[in-house]
Image (cartoon, rainbow, N blue to C red; front, side, top):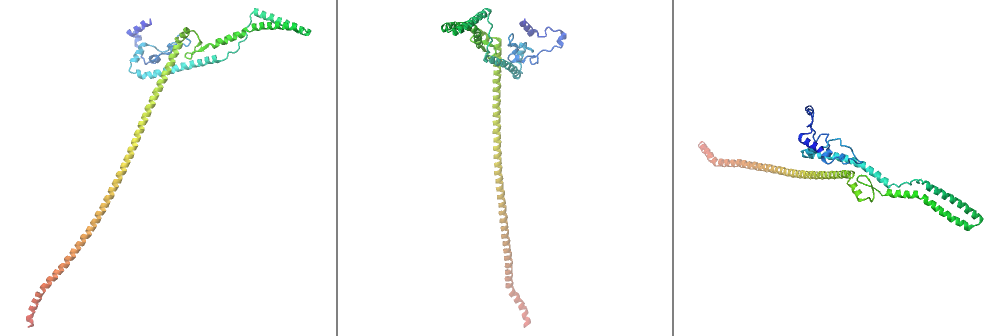
Length: 348
């Protein structure tokens, strides 16, 4: 019936039996709805593992639907939701295992405890009567032994004491049954063993068929799946954390290298700037010295030119005087002669 119902749901939809009015307010269930079991979507639902066992968790309150699971597996958001569902399942399974481990510890303590001595089991009426007769015989024989000893009949007294010893042996055999029962109970208790996977008590050295029946049972297989999933999830988380740590260390190393490169370039630029500043200072100093030399040469050249001009000017004035004086001397005789000649007639 379930298979036929699932086939009809696949062909006609889950709302095939609803009326028109019911269809108006009907909302189709999607795999990401809160009513859908995420545990069933990714791995398994623990409620399905222990049905009809001592660890039965009851029916799951959320929806299990194979069609929704297939839709989830084909969804483009599948990879994004798997870690979320697996984390929730791991949390639920860890709680189950914690409760189970507490039961296992209690069972282990129970097996390790020493069994207290059991109270003596009551004797049957027949054995009680035999014990009473033996005690009465022992009492009478002891009285006779005492009388014979007072009368000096030592040999007869020793013979009666041997009879008393035999009766005491019979009495001890009757009272030994309780101790034997205790030993048997201790031996039986020591034969018990505890399954570390599911916490069930087993009989040590039991038949192979019974051991195989336990190993393949729902409770043992279910808790085995739960423990294996927790181990796998922890390993995956540790691997993911290790990869994240490696990525972070690699990124930190890259940042360190970039910082060192930046510092190196900064120092290089600073050194280059210092060299450039030193070169500029040297050029300024050279230009300043060159300008000073130019000025010095200009001053010296100006002084030499002034000296030359002074010399030429002085030479020019002196030469003019000399030439004028020469001309004056060359011309003055005639002029004087002329003057003298013009004056001579006056003298005559």
